[in-house]
Image (cartoon, rainbow over all chains, first blue to last red; front, side, top):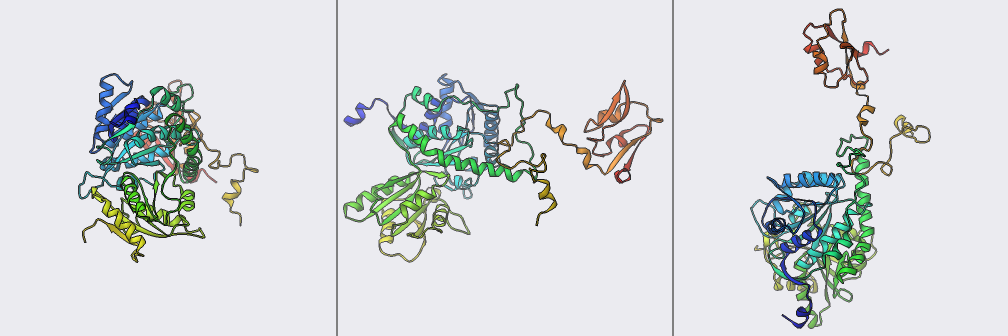
Length: 394
Length: 111
């Protein structure tokens, strides 16, 4: 233990999954619906211990599937209280219909998602296919590099989600096994500071408010459906406007400002990698290494994926020479998701870098320092091929 | 070219025009209880039940089977059908033990 860590009395050593559960404990939601799936099971396991020990007041509902988990969470949230659950991969896919319902009903549910590949073939390891499949669902999406970031983003997500101009659910994502099962340092924030930051949840309308009866989830025919969807778009646009304010307020209790994106040696970089989640840690190491050799390389980490920070991306990348977008997901038949979205935001820009797609890490395929170095090397050596697969055996 | 349905939505002229997305409550919420009464489903009818009260034995079998609770009753006797909500499904005519209910084409009543 270093001198610095000895002094930080609030330093904990937790896995990403435990960190998520720890955040949930400090939020102390009224209801948590529980169903296990590798690699998020430890979130539910850890939380169930808090329930058993009386560390939380949560009503812990053990359901029979993720579809039921999300349904129970939705019902609880619609009744007017804080409800949470957690999932991955097949579980998220199973609850897919309810995921859309959650955002349609405008329920501010925060759900830690541990990114895992979707079958088939069956794979329990990390990739982003599961949450990329939900990118049009109307949920806020945050991709976290480390256990501490997961822990912190859950609070930010909750505060933003519950804002009455937003009222949208949020996924706080972390890489399966890499982050979820790796023990890392994180600085705990005192529960009373968390409580003061998140406040109490006072929904304007709730099913348990019998003085003001409401109907929720009614049928909307062709004459009203479009308007309901337009409201959701407005809400997520409001989330984008409000996010910096929430992040700034969180900085007061954490000492960290979590922007939409994170720049690493980006200012004077000519060759940039854009990536999300734990891979950013690997890229940072390679950037450090290449910078020592005088190479002008940098990283742009995307933290807030929904709402998509298009203005920030254009502003930070338009003057760069070459940019490689790393996608831990594919979109067969079209371009990889992050690559596709970033390319399209440059359409109206007068200046834009050369943009490359690198699909990588599917099904937990390791991405090594050498892999990342080869990407920078491709960029610096004028690689012709724009669409690439990193770490694939030909 | 202004279409008939667009003219109906002109809020200045029609106070009942449908609300835009900025005015609707969010989250699919309906804030007034019992508001389903405002939707006159009788509009959907293509056949109307006609009861022959000379034959009716007031057994209430039509009343208990009606999916819309559209059979009107007074002093323990059937007096008619609530045409605001009767959808003309014909279950009453089907269930009636004395077959005193006929389903008559709605168009005969609309001139």
